[in-house]
Picture 1 (cartoon, rainbow, N blue to C red):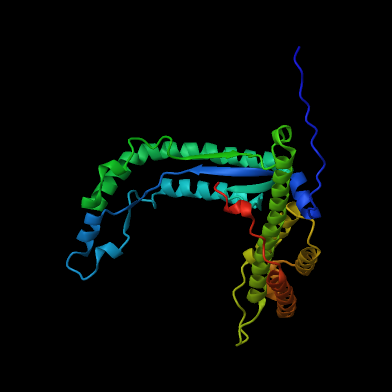
Picture 2 (spheres, rainbow, N blue to C red):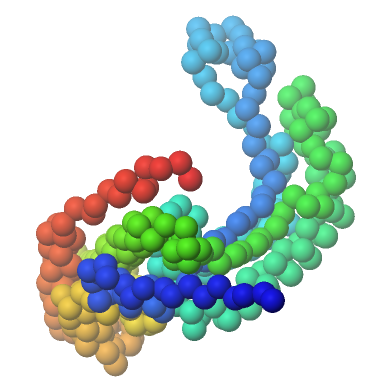
Length: 320
């Protein structure tokens, strides 16, 4: 007769901040992996010697590289845009975490993230198919343009399998099986995880503050006039970007830093209902908004300066 082992998980006893508990309860760890064909190669010592022959340059002090394929080709540019869009989407929908390559994503955003990444992956596969069609021509062009620096072994026989996007949701909570082995070990692991989430909150707040201060400061600067009284160039994107930040901040909000919350609300109130045409048509409105946004940007900078230094956790120094 088989028996089922039931493990009772203890309640959390770590004194974590409300923001860290919110992050831990509502987010999942997401890791994005990008497989990409590296098209840069380092020149050999003999090739560097040939490059500097006839000069006084010591080739041993140089690090010279070559691009083995035309990265400016439309297909290569398209593939590069897809990679940037995928990485940008992952970052846009998530918050930083203390482990490299991992970010924290609100669980309600995971279906949208998966849908977008699947779309990018499908488009990437189509792009690789197009690259396969022009690959012989790209090789011929590279052979001609690189001359004696063309090396046949730099090029794979096929581009299939050189590009891919994949993502996973790694476990960042302490493994429950440790309880059955050593409750003390489980407790130490639980404390380490709690500390990491506390640090993740600090990382996220710092990232929000930096982005917020940069966007607000840029908008304030663009709305101010030159010393000569001439208006500076103002683009609609300056206003659109800060409004996009407001949406992202609300979606990913940590619910813990009242000062940052109040600053964001102040800036949002300042630009509420204001359109780019209003700012171009009214010098008084531009001056008033520039003055008020400059004050908000200065307060954001003050928060950054006065933030306590992040703890450097021993766990971050361990071998990954």
